[in-house]
Image (tube, rainbow, N blue to C red; front, side, top):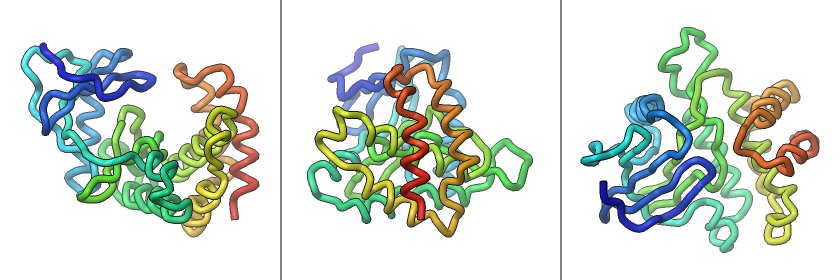
Amino acid sequence: MHTGQLLGSGRTADVYALDGSWVLRRYRDRCDTTEELAVMSYVAAFGFPVPRIGPPAEGARPTDLVLQRLTGPTLAEALLAGRLGAAEAGALLARLLRELHAIPPRVSTNPEDCVLHLDLHPENVMLTDQGAVVIDWSSAAEGPPGLDRAMSALILARVGLDPAFAAGADVRPLLAAFLAELADDGGASAADLELARARQQQNPYLTEDERGRLDRAVDLVLDASP
């Protein structure tokens, strides 16, 4: 099939323009997108902000997703540009997780479980004219909400410890604001952080340097917790 301009590339997928309304997300590492589509459709039915899912493109591969083309910066871009402060961004991330965790599980029979994004961070939130939209549901699962909170906090801390990133921005105020907003929900406990650290340690897409920062990232989250 014909794809348009390459709009961006991540660790596992490339995103191409199809037209003014739709993009093609093409994975490089998986057999199909059935589960991701199911999760996105499920949370969208509860009103959670995700991109609209488009009809399969002619000649599309099983690893392709046709999704709404979103206009606006990512939360990360808005932060770096000074359009949004750490307190507001932390509150937004916390609100999105809280709203997601209010959705009952789609598959699990454990009433304590909920839908988890497991990769919610500022680069996966688009700020559109209609509000914030959460993208990249490839890691979504079901389980206890504390794991999702810990994963987001640990990602923020790990990125903040990256010398290349830290030279341009200090994520500690954002991390502190995020954790403060979630304190009444349970925050990121030491037990949840250990589960999140183990999960990230097993992530094949992290570099060795990133894995090497995980223990320090856990300490940073614990130090920033209210």
